[in-house]
Structure formats: structure tokens, C-alpha cells
Length: 149
Image 1 (tube, rainbow, N blue to C red):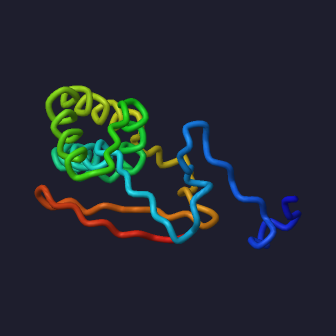
Image 2: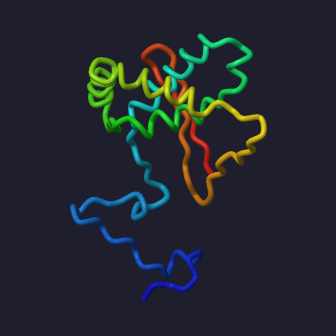
């Protein structure tokens, strides 16, 4: 029987595996890590930085890069990879087959999310035991910083 207190890990029923027999993120223990990435995230970040750099400083101050990134990613297909080989394959696909779509999605994002000085937004705060990865890309090398909330 599952515990009524979700903080009491000893008596909570284990999460079932999904229909394919794989463990889902919610069924993995806290000590296990998930090793996958949407390759488009880094490519879109680079494109946002490139396009913002072309803007005048006056206009650039009205752009929230995070909103542009989210806008563009929501309009592009996901390209996940779980290995270095998959990373390279998905990166090549993004830079060849999706290049024009990426440029256009970022351009549309820049137009859509220009800051309205009268509009107030509250930045997203992650809750729970969630691991957030941020990536630093230099050339073809990427480093990852993880934050736990």
C-alpha cells in the first residue's frame, strides 16, 4: 500500500515501468542521472546570440534572450541525442536541414518577445528536486553546469 505522506520514501510504492519496459524519469532513483540533450537548444542559443549582436544596443535592451529561445524551440522539432555519435548526427541534421527554420524561428521570436516596458513578467522558478542543466558552448566543445532546486 502506498504511503499517504509523500515525503516518507520508505513506504511509497515504486513507480511502474512504462509500457516499453523502460524506466521513466519519475521512476528513477535520485542517484541516477538522465543523459540526453536536445541538440537544438545549443544551436538556438547560438543563433539568438548572433541575431541579438546584430541589433542596435537600444533595441537589444528590450529583448529577453530566454524568451526568444523558448519561443524558437517551441516552433522547432526536437533533436535529442544520448551519445556523442548521436550528438554529432543531430547537430549535422540541424545545421543542414533545419538551418533556415532555426533562423526564421529566432527572427520571429525576436519580433514576438520584445519587452513592453509596461508589461511585468515573473521569471520561472523551478520547484522540487529538479536538476536544471545550463550549457556553455565554445567551438565544438560544450560544458555543462547543473543546478539543483
